[in-house]
Amino acid sequence: MYEIQPVILAGGTGSRLWPLSRELYPKQLLPLIDENSLLQTTVLRVCQLEDVLAPVVVVGEEHRFITRSQIDALAVVASYSILLEPLGRNTAPAVCAAVEFCALTSDDDTILLVLPADHLILRQEAFIEAVQKAVELAAGGAIVTFGIEPQSPETGYGYIERGEGSSVLSFKEKPDLATAMAYVESGNYFWNSGMFAFSIKTFRSEMEIHAPEMLLAMTESVRHGLRDGKFYRLDSKAMALSPSDSIDYALMEKTDKVAVVAANLGWSDIGSWKALWKISTKDGQGNVSTGDVILEDTKNCLVRSESKLVATVGLEDTLVIETADAVLVAPLSRSQDVKKIVTRLKKKHRDEFRFHRTVFRPWGSYTVLEQQPRYQIKRITVYPGEKLSMQMHHHRHEHWVIVTGTARITNGEDVFLLHENQSTYIPAGVQHRLENPGVIALELIEVQNGSYLGEDDIVRFDDDYGRGAAGEQVTEAS
Image: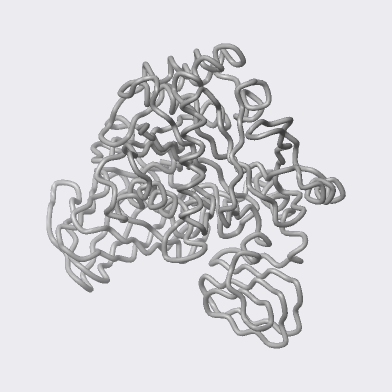
């Protein structure tokens, strides 16, 4: 038997699932199908494999704490590592970094199983069987991709043209509808799943041939990286020297060692709202509804409410997505075009592409309840035993009112406890800290007022989560 090293790629933003998926709370972290997020479902999936090593999860710096929190919440993985990318360089450098990181502790014959974190696989037994076939091929020196048997002519997927046995004739870009129909009708094409298996030895040797500059940069990025508990931070200067490319372009389309395993997994990358509608359980009228929803004379629609009642009358083939700060309405057939809205939001420098009103932090979360030019109201939740950084603000004053639980407050030179319905005032320029010493979640209302209320008006002096040096002004993403 060969040892399997799972590598879960958990980067990306899932822009076509806006407004539910945001840059700082992307698709892979959302519970789209059941109570678990797609990342959690992927972790649970690999835990059912035999001879499997502790998983390695590759994420961007900004998602590190919520990723750790979601994995720990499963309570099924005692050991794992989170590889932190300081900047985005597409999938090829991410995979390359994972290979070099795993090579620090594993021998060259170890088989890496590379899986995106945001895919749905309904047939677990078929997945295990496909992995076993892929591992055998990878042990023989192949770089294996998983080809999904197409169920329809999809234009949102790349395609793999199969050859004899497990050989691959070519990779195809995302086609137009007519080309996709021809692919499916021919019976000679797979959907390209973006899942791979290969040995450390084979991957390294092929990268030396086809992408040596990238291999060198990412090897140096790992070599000069730093361990921080379960996190491993790649070196940003070395990674900046790596070309930005997908694993398909950098390697799969060039190597002569590629092989494909046919896989009928009940697979979807949930790449659009229409894709989610297709795989979800529907009512008698073909509707998929989530949250506080009332449907009247509505057929074949996807309607999702996150914060308030959503009612529809006389709709067909339509998606309606409501969140606390945005509503999306579009034909289901145009769901691939949602990313155009995200592009426009970015150009206008609007926060709705990046944040939800609820923002997750390593200590808990905060929700913006109201935002005006000179004041802002937040609901803050602090997990039991957790604490915010010791910090101060240049431009804003804060009023805290405890709603539930007990708070330990540091306010300048004073340290004291507050209970439900008690409050305190933090003037601008005063060092302060909020802690939850109890065993239940602490909730409070924070009223901020001042000339500037941005999240980058924070100077940290002490932090349990390693976010910056003492006295350093922080950024909004941290």
